[in-house]
Image (cartoon, rainbow, N blue to C red; front, top):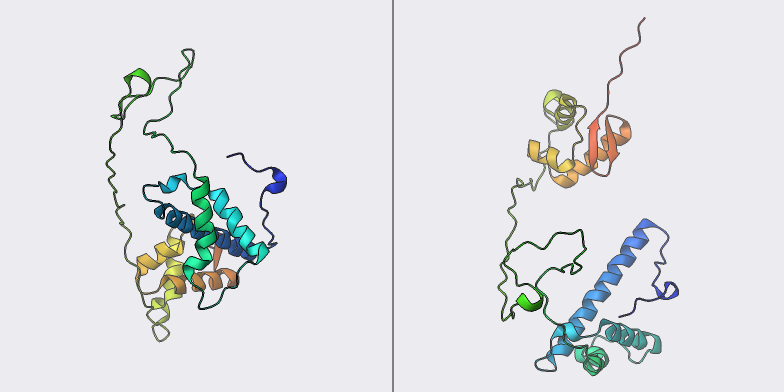
Length: 230
């Protein structure tokens, strides 16, 4: 598919970070909705690979429905009625089937300075290639070694000053003034405050000058300056 020209590329209209974030989420939501419609259109034609559905056809059809206002959406509108135009147009412009590629691209130039691809068990290309009949996919779940964070905060307003949370956190930061602490690390260290509460307290202490905020979610102790000589 030919990439669009610069004047055809979509432009973000928002002028502030919050608006840009909202607009990006709306574009991602639209993309996922169109992909769902494409899969439904492929399932309406038995034996059709969803990878053959053209995203441009789905996008332009959805755009025509909005600009032409061909239907009125109500609470009783059937879902198939809303998606029918897109689902009917996609099968009429299916892309050709893609050839299977399970090997990395290989430099064929004999004068190339790149070394040959190492034998890693995957089929090669050219005359030594083998026909791919099936693929086995193994999904490995990453191990989560991070400790569980507290779900409730313990109130310490009636505790002794040395046992209160602010004193303990300031003492922890002063032990290594050069370390950049994240709220998650501090929360896991003490285990008596939620992450949301820790964020609020660290931001409040940084605003009052008790600690330093060096970046998004990065805090450090405020360096102590020596007292002036009399």
